[in-house]
Length: 437
Ligand SMILES: [Zn+2]
Image (tube, rainbow, N blue to C red; front, side, top):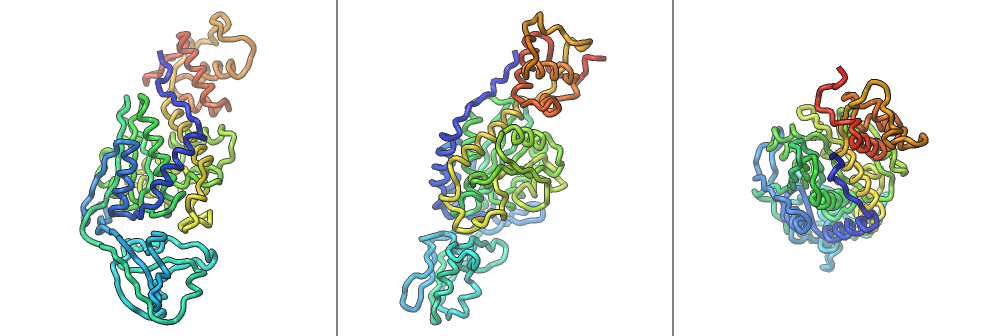
């Protein structure tokens, strides 16, 4: 019979350390929406999972967008009149405005200043800035250092290239018993930033490896894509395939110490929304759930009206709600193995629930079956309540999750009751037609 072959146990502390180690390895790479940093990142992930790398040529039209030219950078600095490097890309890749065009000039401070970006409210942090779709060059620096700049001439040097090339993304597909897919998407376009970017990438990679070790009901598709343009490019190239996505999650910001946060899909009542709500409610930990809005990460593209996919977003503290967001302080101290391990556990709970959620039908619907004579009933406790709830609501119209939610019992108890009832021939999978006619 009937017990799920999908079963994995997780040691959150150990998993948290493993995820953190992967983040640490990926941290130094200078990523962007295109370029070798993305390739290097995906190559590193290939040590964990056999993901496929796709290359989309610059200039490719993807819906209303065009894949941009490929950006690569080798070095960059600003030197003062004494020849001292006062900004050095080799010390932090956040120092360069991401997608800066090449430049080598000597100019006075007044002409340099419009190209400098700082965070006056956090004078010791370097901001993260990009200019993907407008040609520009610039440097990001600590405001404290900016205040110390002397009048005089500065040498600016950015050894970058912006040329026809490719947009690179990674895709890992696991075939399950069903064609229907679960999509897990994370963005790979940020340079040395840990929570925003690497936590999602590392968690998705370790989850993919874990799921790959077992037989699953659903097929799984993991996407490692540059934000916005990557999701748009994937959807444009896979419009038909996207229709088989039955449940989906965008993963990002999963390593900070804040509480788990879920952003509902555009539909608001998709199975993934019900599943995550149930998991967080029964996690015994604080959580926050909010409704869809059309800004944020790649859920914007998956939930655009022409697709309207059942894709929500799982994070901890939402982006923008922590000051470290898009600064050098989103670093290896900001993300913690404990938080990463807890996030991983919740993800596994979500997958387990998605895999196990089905509708069944009571084979003895006219009055209650006599549970006592089958050894299923002693005194009324959670186990017996779960049996009675499953028998009563298994009419084909309720899946196990809706029974769990209506009874207030955790999904695992309801699922266990369903297995017991099936072993006693009192329940069978619903095949689309009610037996109660
Ligand atoms: Zn970001």
